[in-house]
Length: 280
Image 1 (cartoon, rainbow, N blue to C red):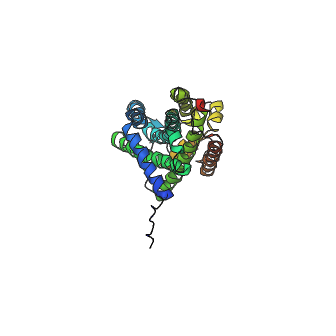
Image 2: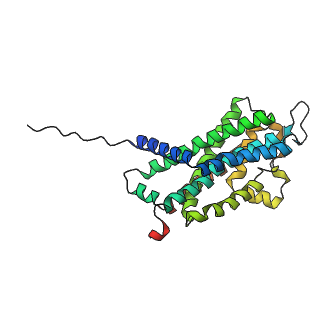
Image 3: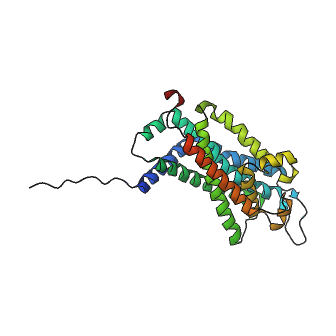
């Protein structure tokens, strides 16, 4: 008689992606520098600018409508830039570090599918972004009496803007990581890029107060539309008159963010590197 052979079942794609997400979260929680950048950076800016300008009002509200404080306006911008920082800047830097340390090389040699690896990265970014947004909203409400939207439509808008903005930021972070030849220069290269986008996308200033040239420049990139989408959630409807088109432009926001997602995905697929440049 022959004894039956028992073979271990191969793990499913879902289980591998979940396991990878756990690894990514553990690595994030163990990296104090990364946690400080992701959580403390927007919190410091919110508290600092809120303390200085938080009580100032923007625009002239119609009769019976609440005035928009700078803190209310600034919260929407900080949520948008937090999504970009987590999905784009931080992800590009951490992937570059993993490549230089041969972590990606070792992952590539394992049975872990590339799609499961990236799914783990995406899940980690979504989780961290949700926690970051909750902290920012808590600070805004607790320190500066920021008013949260009460209607279901506003939260539905928040959901699709958040998901589209996160997806675009993640693929752009992955694509950018392959353009960085080494991790040491990653922060020095990306930080000025993000700062320029923040100052031209209506995060720190009312967008219409910027010059026409800066407005046109910012409109080419996702942060402007991500911030505008968040303003449509946290600001009253009448404040849409302060936008260039005099409206929140939800269809255009969706189109631009989706277009950047497609661009980032195409570049990621074409250029992503598992090995260091000096290994080739």
